[in-house]
Length: 377
Image (tube, rainbow, N blue to C red; front, side, top):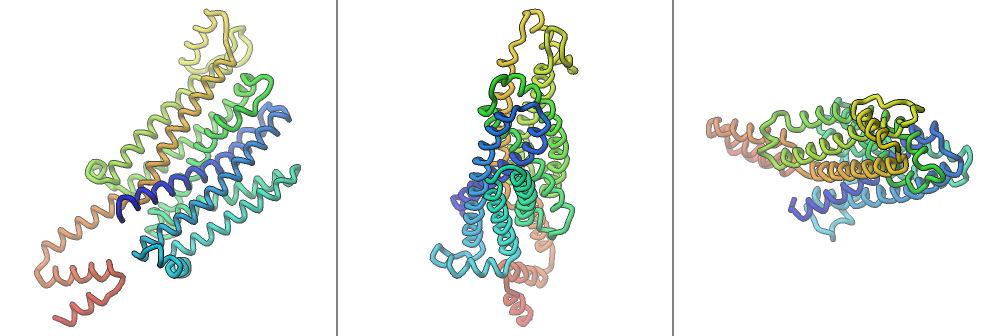
């Protein structure tokens, strides 16, 4: 694959990840954070209208990027040009694992679109449509896993389960950050500082639980694809993964500041009312503010929202690295290929020739070269 084609494909995958995380995280935020909090009916309705508009855009983005991914993968699989797409795409859809997964994905996107249309009626149908959409979004995330590196061992394997779970918690985390920082903020009315202070602890707990699973599954997936430390510094896959880990660290440090500094500070009141800060960072900040004789909750809320947005931007960079990783051969493939070449070099001449023809046959998708080699001996 040429470098321009790889970058184009990675860009399409990045937009796909953005759409999916926005869709999944917005729905999860609605059920896990918004409902039990102290929002007024006007605030909730304002948030829900904005969320549904963004949900429609996310569904459209996932559909468009799925179509683009099909076109680009078909070009790579067939080795053809744009002129041959009309005949190559039906073959890919009917005769490849990716094609079957893609068709299921499109069906699920249709389910999401139908649920969104039904949700326009409001009332109880809105809750049911949101639940159906959340269920469909989790299955769309599964199709992403089944068409990636994790499915190299098969569809029902531990790497697939781990990667799917990783995708779900990533979507809940990143999409939740977007919902909190960009969707909820303009919807607040009256006392924005109070509403942020009411929702911040619950969102922080949800994000912390998701981050724990995110770290565990991410480390497992990285080990499966890299298998040792050396490829991190000797392969393009390892370099990209290292940049991704750096961005993950930046996002997690920001998340830690949000959880252990801003959340306790928002719950703190100099007059002694409310829950006191439970962390030393919160106590220090609260003591300084108490000495000043004031606690500007509105200003603290704005700082918290800005920190949430910065965390989201770092997470968007993580998604960009993830999209690029999907277009690079995993380090384990490179190491396996190197070991195979070393094994061929140590074989006798007859064995090296047979191995060479065998590799050619596998690369071309035909056993003809290997059969011809066998007949020549």
